[in-house]
Length: 296
Image 1 (cartoon, rainbow, N blue to C red):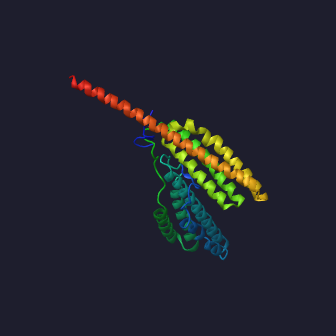
Image 2: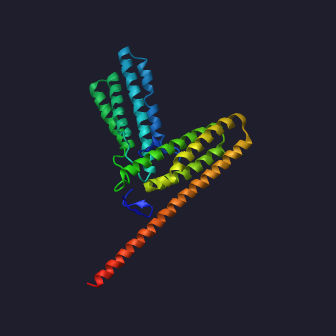
Image 3: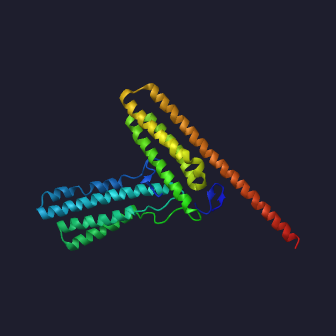
C-alpha cells in the first residue's frame, strides 16, 4: 500500500473525467470556460442549409451530410472540453476513455471534405479537410493522454474513489438543475457555495483514497438526500413561493455546508496525525541507526 505523507500520496496521487466531467465531471464546480469558440463551431456550418436546398438532390444530400458531420464534430469537441475541465479540476484523474477533441478534429476534417466534394471537387475537398482538421487541432488542443497523479497508488482504491466521486458529482448536478427551476437567484448562489464545500471533500478523498470509508456516507447517502430535498423544494416553491419552505431549505443548506466542511477538516487533521506518526517513526529509526554506527 502506498505510504501517506502529509495527506497526499508521493510523488503523485484518480476523471475519469473529466469531467467532465462527466462528462461526469465538474461542470457546476465553477463557471465553465467552454463556450465562445465552441459555439462558433455550431454556427459556422449553418450556411450549408442554404447551399443544400438550392442544389440538385445528390448535391443537397452531400451538403446535408456535411452539415450533420460538422455539427457532430462541434458537439464532440464541446464534450471533450468539458471532460478536460473535469480532468484539470482534479489532482488525481484518469485520462478520458474517449479522446473527444481529437475525434472532433477528425469529424471536422470529414465534414469539410464532404462540403468540398459537394461544392468543388476531390482536390479542393482534400485541401479543406487537411486545413480544417489541423486548425481544429491547434484551436482546441489534444485530449489528456495519460492518467494524472496515480503513480504508486493502489488502482482498486482509486477506482472506488472515482466511482464514488462520479456518483456524487451526478447528485450535485441534479441539485443545480433542480434549484434553477425554483427561480431564486439567492438560493442558486447558496447551492453553488455548498457544492464548492462538497467538492473540497471530494478532492481530499481523491488525494488519499483511504479516506473514502470515512466519507462514503457524505458522498452517497447525504448527497442523495440533499438532491431529493432540492428537487422537492424546487417543485413546491416554483408553484407556491412558500416562504417557510424556503427558510427550511436555506437552513438545510447551512447544515449541509457546515457538516461537509467539518468532515473535510477532520480528514485533514487525521492526515496530519498520520504525518506526525510517520515523522516520529522515521526519526526513531534514524536515531537508532546513528547510535548503531557510533558503536562500530
